[in-house]
Amino acid sequence: MITLTPDAASKVGELLTQEGEEGLALRVAVRPGGCSGFSYEMYFDTEVNDNDQSAEFEGVDVIVDQSSAMLLQGASLQNAGFSIDNPNAQRTCGCGQSFS
Image (cartoon, rainbow, N blue to C red; front, side):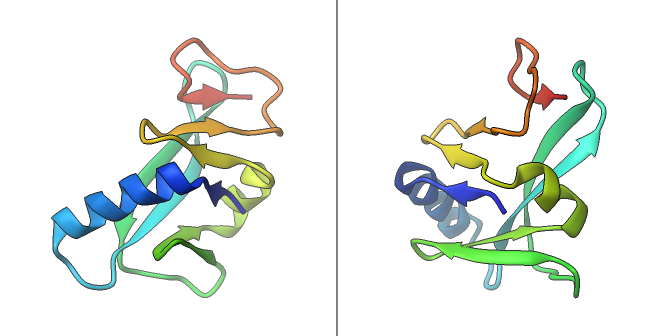
C-alpha cells in the first residue's frame, strides 16, 4: 500500500476540500501503459470495492485496488507536487509518470 508524506497529505486534503463533496478519497492505481510499461493514475473516488485496500493519512483516505497495491508496496506519494517514490520500479521514464 502506498503511503502519503505529511506534505502530500496536506495538499490532497486541500484539494478534497475544494471539491466540496462528502466521502471522497484519493484513489491511486497502476495501469498498463506509459513509455516504461506502467503508469500511475490518481483521482478522487467515492466507491470502495470489497478487494480494495484503504488507509488514512492525516485525515485523507487513500484507496488502492488489489493488483495496484502489489506494485505500490513500499511506495510513497511525496511533496505537494505528487512525485511517487516506488522501490519496486526498476526503471522510470523522464516524465516520472511511468515505470517498469
